[in-house]
Length: 177
Image 1 (tube, rainbow, N blue to C red):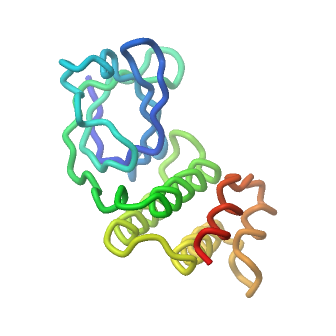
Image 2 (image 1 turned 90 degrees about the vertical axis):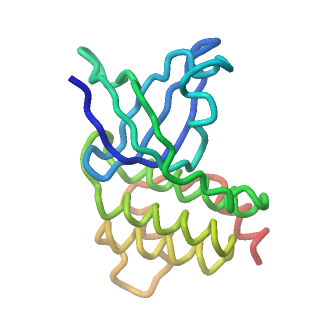
């Protein structure tokens, strides 16, 4: 029996010459990893359907052992072409996905964080990258985690709860000023 969900692709990792590991953020299941067998083959049923930040409806077969599930089908709902218009927007989208990966427990629902990520990617796709967008995302994530109570920098508060912030942050700050 296959499970079905809507998700956002956070990361793609080469597994073999023809297969990929696809990391998803979902509302119902949290962050899950699937194997897309043959996805790197040009004639694959996954061709053109698996790329960073895509929103898709997908189905997978749960692994009998471990947490690497078998991806069965994928139907793209939003390609988010606007994210690819400039390098800074891609960097900030990647930073947001990296933060979500840091603070979310794999395979545990995190609906509010998934929703925050979806809103952030939609905003970046429409408006592009800005320092204000970066700081708003960090503040909202800190608030959801319950550490954004005072007026301090949200990234410091996130770091204090153990989220090792992606190294990309300092480069982003310099580029977005």
